[in-house]
Image (tube, rainbow, N blue to C red; front, side, top):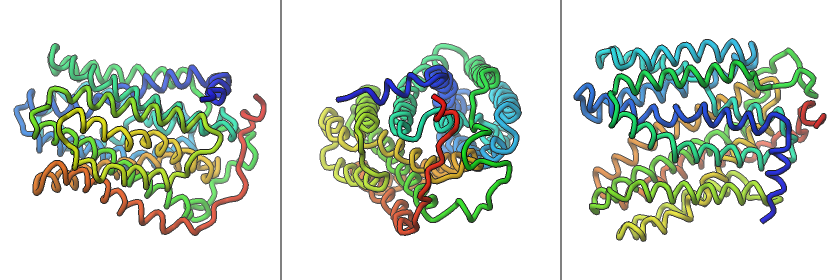
Length: 400
């Protein structure tokens, strides 16, 4: 398999250092959900439902804040927004272990809204630095980096909170959020070049760029995340029901490894499948998984095909958004992508959980696939809307 596309991307000045920085910035984001859950359950003595309420509040806050922060990036630049978000996120997590449950639930949404949008920032920087012809490989690398953080971050967080005090762990998480935000502020990676062809200080009207094509892309992304979170939930439920909860870490690691392999292939080939078809495969391949949910090693094997399509689907989503959105509103468009994915996450857990509670884990896999298809179908109906024919190429990329 040719790896030249990745070599070309990594040879672009500032790309390797920026990707390493965004990897660090994403690590605390992968820890916050499990740490908040364990803190509320063990530290405050509340149930998982109460923990889920706070977690849902943080997720909702992130979904609401992502497009607003993206618009602020477009208008004010990176440093002012990252400074405000970094301070707000640090204060939230340092204060969290000292708040009663009611207060914690009340500040969950604003706390989520102030999270530094490391994901959308990484995509903006890559769209600025990397030529259009190399962006599939760049976004594939970015998606692979995300998978790696989810393999490392939660494990570090669980080890910390189980060996150290919850107060110390959440405080350390806040310091980590603040430290990575400061590094982003210090490095100040480019998110849009002022000399970019087609760019101007005038923001185009919303209706001129939030077209049916872009809405379709966002809905398909929401459907994909619905499938992913539903698959993970059904996998955990199946392992628990069959008394194999001890191998959960191994199964999740294999799922992540399969996604990474799929992402590597997606970015290396000259032409890959489009986002809609990748999403269709992602959903259809998970529907029958419940037919082989035991023994655990068989479940692990049948989960590999759908996870091979995971990273390519996410990378194709980013590639499509960056191609459609004008450079003047790239931050807001990337924020809308974050919001759509978090919407899929927020819908997937309760819907698939309801299916599992009222049937079996096997039906959870079917609910994950079919539910994602329902959301994505609304997007596929918008595919008839033509997208812009001209691809704006960053001036910085042209100068490489």
